[in-house]
Image (cartoon, rainbow, N blue to C red; front, side, top):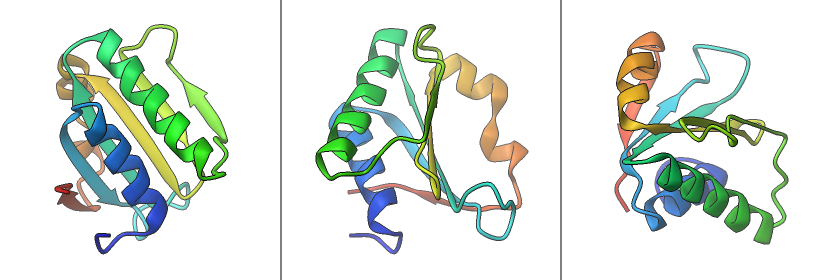
Length: 115
């Protein structure tokens, strides 16, 4: 386990299982009251974005972790999975560059996930 909480590790590991690219964890604790962590990753296609999101949801559900909210699954270009203190953002690469959450939330500490 990394220095993050178990939920963050489970989300990042599940994304990695499905070959998510450039997995970044933003520590949002001092930046917003909305959540403690963002996990941001990208994929090559909408099919892969959906596969990553579905796998995260499945793996966390197996551990009894319930999803609070999900957005973007139909389009599959940017899927948001809200687990309360941890929110996953799975992007098609070009949309990730466009929205650039890492820059938008530049005050947050940023960590690259490596297993």
